[in-house]
Structure formats: C-alpha cells, structure tokens
Length: 287
Image 1 (cartoon, rainbow, N blue to C red):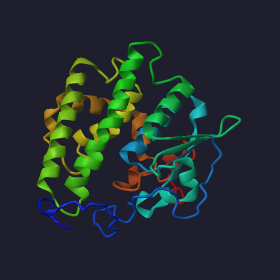
Image 2: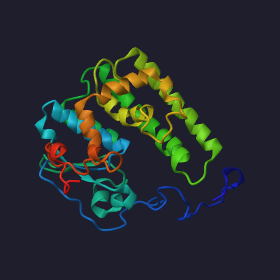
Image 3: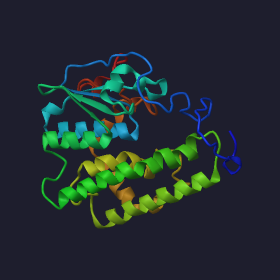
C-alpha cells in the first residue's frame, strides 16, 4: 500500500485482498452468503441478530425503552453476530439482511414473518408497531424523523470516514483524517446548536431521534469512540454533553448498551439476551 500522494488510480479497479486494515479479512466487493448457517430462533416474537456497535445499540436501547414503558410485546431474543468472524455472511443472516450488516430483526408476531433491516428502519418499525417514542402530530413528527435521517446520513462520515482513517486504517493519511475530522466537528456543532434550543433533538420529548443519535455522537463526546475525545475537543460541545448525560442516566439505555456487547468491562457485557432476568443472573452459559 502506498501513501495517498503517490497513488494513481488504475483505469479499472480490481480487488486487492491483502489491502490491510482492521476489517480487511471480512471486507469484500460482492454481496451474498459465504457459508451456510441457519439463524437461531428463540421463544419471543421479536428476534434480533446484532452486535453492540453504535448501530446495534440503537435497537437494544429501543427495545428496552419499550419494555420500560410497559409494552410487553417488545420482549425479544438478542442473538450475537460476531462481525469480525464473518457471521453476517451466513446464509440465514443474509436472508434477513441482504446487505450483511447488523442489526437485523425478524418479527414473528403476525401471520407472516416480517424482516426489517437498517437500524433507522427498525426504529421506525418498532415505534409505529407500539405507537411509542415517535410523535404522531406534525410538526413534531417531521422534526423527529428529520433528525433520525440526519443521523443515518451523517454517521458514515463519523464511522467509515473519520473512525476508519483515524483508528483502523493501516496507514495514517493526513488529508483523509483532516477532511473527516472537519466534517465530524461540523456535525457536532450542528447538534450543539440544536440542543442549545431544545431539550431533545425532536423537541421536548425523548424520541427515536435521540435513540439513533446517542450511540454515535453521545458515545463520541463521552470518549467511547475511536479514542478521539481530545483530538476532536469534544468538551467544547457543552449542549451535546448535557444531552448525552441525560440519556445515559436512563436505566433502559444502560441495559440496552449491555446487550450483545463483547468488549470492555465484563460486568457491562451481556452477550445474548433472552429474558429480562439475564441482566441479573448473567451466568457463564449466557455469556
């Protein structure tokens, strides 16, 4: 691999498998399964296949919030998908999400199973299914959905852009890091200005917009993402910090962040979740 200043793109790009980087072993330019593997199915109608990345945390936080609101139909089984091992390319997972990304959800509560993939789509699906955490009247609904889709469009610059080149890329490229650091700081400023005038992103109420944005940008300002808190001067975004602390204090958020987690403090990990009691017992077989 050469430095970006020395690279001249070829007329036709070809896949160079040993291209380095943390996820080089599972990245590829084609879709579809690499192996046959059926997905497990538990006893609840909602079956989640995920990992506690920021995108995965959105859904487990959402489900725990729904349960906290008394929606017993939101009980779920959360199965661990180890993306570093290529679990997302198993035939069963690809049937649920042809894009081979976590999270993926199967809803068996109706006469026909429903598959839902893409974290934003899952949040909207669950919010509408249970009539919770999404406004029903305008303009509040439009504001909530606008911030939800802001996150879906913005996070790739944070994760695949800044996070990749700052943390995971095999070489440090000044132009790439500077370009994406500038964009991430602009995004933080967008959030900070909004949260200076509003308690939550959608307005006065906590919604799926906050659930979507918090694991990415809340995690960033609290120092969990990419070890870049000092580099990005996240302490300057005081309104985002206030908002992140408010959300972090919610018990359902604490539970949701534990589910399908395989790194960090072992006491904060629950590799699979099949019952609410799992948070208390956490026996070795469940870990």
